[in-house]
Length: 254
Image (cartoon, rainbow, N blue to C red; front, top):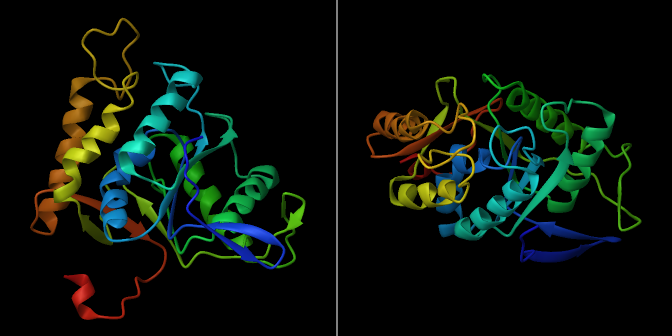
């Protein structure tokens, strides 16, 4: 997968590829639809960001596994993330079980993110809800020293992210906070357009899907405008959290 693999650090017996923010989503294109403006804003602010797609989106109505992986790589280059990885879980059938949890714990311990962004806790697509549950459980268990994982035959240290943020998808959820992405909205659309097989294309001869209609892209724009309007800007992306948001300066909330 795409990646220029960021900052490598030696910690005790193994390599860590740290990123400040790790975006973990159920499908290729979820990150672009839900939080690519926040990714761009964060990178512009000097933070490092990586993406892990849990599945290859192989059950999508349009495209196929090979096409979707290529589109995901193309979008990663547009966004400028440090890497994009794929956990290879089964689209539509992955569950929160020991195997999937341990696979994700390995990645969390490898990348030691301060912040994780994942799918909405409540949504029309069961994979999105399962992804949020998987991320929450793996993030917590990753901090337990008695859970042993290895990478390159080296023991990993326990690690727990500071906070998990849940994006807002099809179902409207009142956000705990909204990120101003007005300066990055056009580039957000550029990253979405990398997924040519998935979204509106009047020339496509493939079956129409929920996300391939012209109306769906209008919805993405409208949701962005709605979130932006709530904080007095043109475009925004909203998030929820199980935890209180900690700040060290009141000016950070302006």
